[in-house]
Length: 184
Image (cartoon, helix red, strand yellow):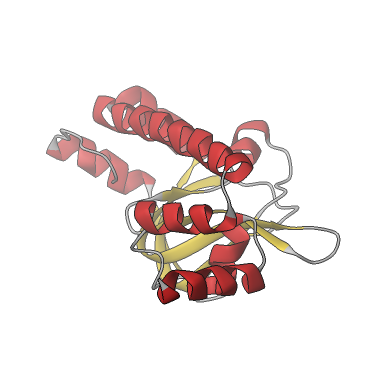
């Protein structure tokens, strides 16, 4: 699991027992808009994305998750309300699913797991804060350069149209920005 944890063998066993492994084929949904999310998902292989689709059919990507990242609609899991997001696989993937009840139990019974989750939540907040700042403050070129700097591993795994969606720009704008960067 992502994060540095000092797990005992017994604690690792508890985490493994709580998880259900699931294969998700490329383009297959893990969850769809309107579903109530019931599981936290830890990516053990592959790449998934969380996104919404607006009334014009335009996708808006919230995040990507690759190996050793968590993905899921935390709001839906916590409130029991239907999700406004879709989560699907960009490439053939495998995830470890942990139900809310088992997840909460692990947080209370396995200190290393709880510490890892708190660390991830703190980092996620900082990433979200930086993403908001980037979105409202930077040019399309600067957004793309920041993306390449922060997520170099995604540039070759994720289609450019999805990167554009994540950055809040059109695919055409991203293509123009990439050409300008290459010319320099």
